[in-house]
Image (cartoon, rainbow, N blue to C red):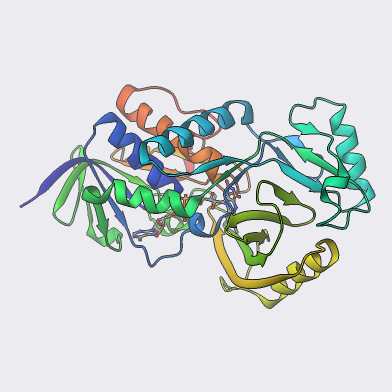
Length: 349
Ligand SMILES: Cc1cc2nc3c(=O)[nH]c(=O)nc-3n(C[C@H](O)[C@H](O)[C@H](O)COP(=O)(O)OP(=O)(O)OC[C@H]3O[C@@H](n4cnc5c(N)ncnc54)[C@H](O)[C@@H]3O)c2cc1C
């Protein structure tokens, strides 16, 4: 017998988990299909929300809207789930060069919202700081492993552990059928897998490989994120996430020795504490060269929708755009023009 729901979600990474959270909140029926043996960018990400970016330390896109929205969303999620998910964690900048120190000093006095001076002496026991230090305020760390795990528990009754294959999808009038389930809409939240999807693969995805090490560092305070040429992010206990790489052109999706050696050389040059590498992670970011999400309904088959393209900023983008897409479908509200896939309708038709 066919089971009827309003939505099918494909993928339970950051985006799919937020999608299911809002569906649950709105009391809408859904099923979520996820294949947990498939790699998910979310499970290797460091979980940082940082309002500034790049060598010039400029504010990231829409951050004044996205950051407060995301902080509220993760805080509500944490209260509902009864577990700790979000933590304020200022970034201690260990300036890697004179140019970076000058760049920081310049930004401090020009259109500065998030930067502050700090006391270099605080970090001298832990790091070599020949070019001094600084601080980025209003940074947050999301415990993504906990987020995915509690997300899974919360959606237990709706969760289907299965490989989604397009050959099992049937488009019908005003809806879809997948195996023995029929739904009004299917929303693809399957990260880089959407690049193989015949309905959405012409979107200009540009996947990006990222690697990180998990490193045990005894005695490094876990209240801060540290940034030099590399980021050192508190993970749990005495473990820190160290990374990462951004590779647009890559030959394989395996961890590379070159990356590991580069991180070790960086750690050796800045860290005064002994450390031990315990793991090496790799993931593919569902990115695109425009660095804007892909959100919306298919122009010819409006029973198909996508929420993807979160690139390097999934933590802050996912809750906001998951809700925007649902509100668009349920209430007819607009999707931000820069994120809406309407800008690519000519490619999807
Ligand atoms: C090394 C690294 C560090 C990062 N650090 C940060 C950071 O600090 N802050 C930040 O904001 N972002 C960071 N990111 C980016 C962030 O990870 C992504 O933007 C985000 O995780 C994308 O989420 P998603 O849900 O779109 O995709 P994913 O997390 O990849 O989820 C897709 C899901 O779909 C499932 N799936 C795929 N295909 C199928 C199928 N056929 N059938 C069933 N299930 C399927 C997969 O199992 C997976 O669970 C980082 C990424 C990497 C690689």
